[in-house]
View 1 (tube, rainbow, N blue to C red):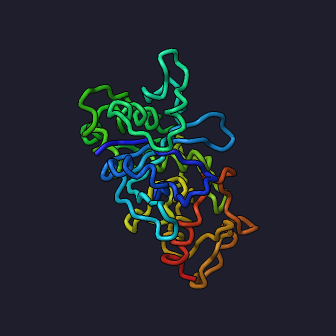
View 2: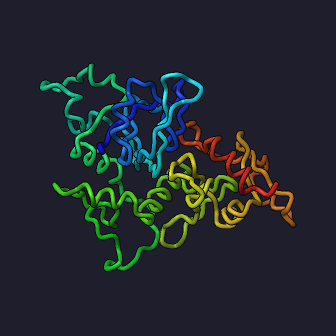
View 3: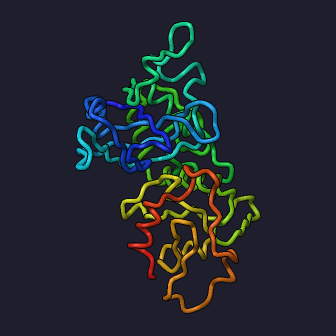
Length: 300
């Protein structure tokens, strides 16, 4: 097994869903086959940002042929996690050694490859850079003796880890549910500016922590990912109603109340019954997850 970088563009013609599946032509099959059971890093342009960035990572579960398009395949993914910051591919002199020549210029033959295999040290450096930001509004934490034990990767101080024996600790932490929940919550609160998408409430408690919660649209226990596009910021009461199918969202972000509600909650919600979501499409709830919620959770 080996780690790799996968090029992804939001408006790509390929049939991708970030963190769920990656669509690719046969020319990259032999490389992606090597990653089955291991991790890949997403890489590419970001709307309204100059340059190209590493933006998240996932684990390759399996590869399946595209039944509708000859010589094309799908890599199905698990355990997706957005980075808490976009990592410019050229910062710190670059993370992929073969991407740059000795004089620091970009190697064009390498840069145009949509799938690039990574050295273990390159993967570790990218992940460290992408998940190193501390939460600006951390929740209450356990006492030190029960805090995560992997140095610099999810502990409160966010001390950078530097070790030749990095791989197992890094991967162990990437699969750690409390760590992933904390990163998901951090990302959702940030892009929604600590504000409930359904009500507009932005409550900050006495300790300076936001009361808004990070809701998974398709729950993790039902196969949902930790992608930002599978999340939305909701106040506690609205989150409870959303998880129980009493509220849902249309693809146009219209708030849908269930007929099973035995009281009118419209006074709690935006008057136009529209959720307020980030402007950039790659940060908005994805139709794939919204459809799943309407079909499996919503009590229409």
